[in-house]
Each structure stands twice: as C-alpha cells, then as structure tokens.
Image (cartoon, rainbow, N blue to C red; front, top):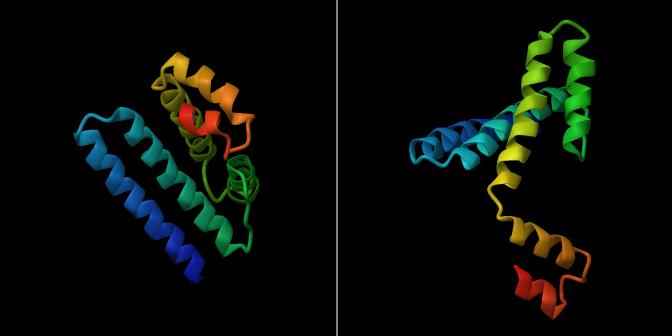
Length: 122
C-alpha cells in the first residue's frame, strides 16, 4: 500500500470517529459532513492506489464510478451513497447558515479578501 493511500485511510478513520463523537453531542450537520468525508477519503485512497488523483469532489465521484463500480469491483449502491452523502452534506451545511449570512457572504465573496468590507462581513 502506498504511503499516500495509508494517510487517506487514516483520515477516513479519523472522520468516522469524529462523526460518531459529534453525533453523540447532537451536532447533526457536523456529523453528516464528517461521515461524507470518511467516504470521500476512502474513495480517494482507492483511486490513489491506481495512481489517480483529482482536485475536485466530482472528479473523485466520477472516477470511483468508472474504475470501481463499472468494473464490478463495488456495487453501484456505494457510488450512490457517496454522491448522496455529498448532496446531503451540502444541504445540511447551507441549511444551517442563516439567510442573511448567505446574502452577506455572496455580496462580500466577490470583493478582494483584504478589503475592509470582506473582513467585516465574516
């Protein structure tokens, strides 16, 4: 096993433990995020073993389907779970942000990060 693969699997394991801990505390949004990242890091680790790296989540999702689901190594349900967890993680995170904060962020994110208004809006 490659060192980078082992590192990703350790990150996945830490994400699982983190998800369980924050779930016990009742933090569902953080638990959903950590659970997704456990799946994501595992998919990245599998792809790393094949020498494949991606900079975006969608790239990992698609490559996992291409190299592991379509080849029959994993059932299609695992790809669906990965993509579904990504969507749910995003929905939970954005749902937990007050609307006024989202609007403020959209307005400020187009400004340079060193601008006074951007720093003040955070």
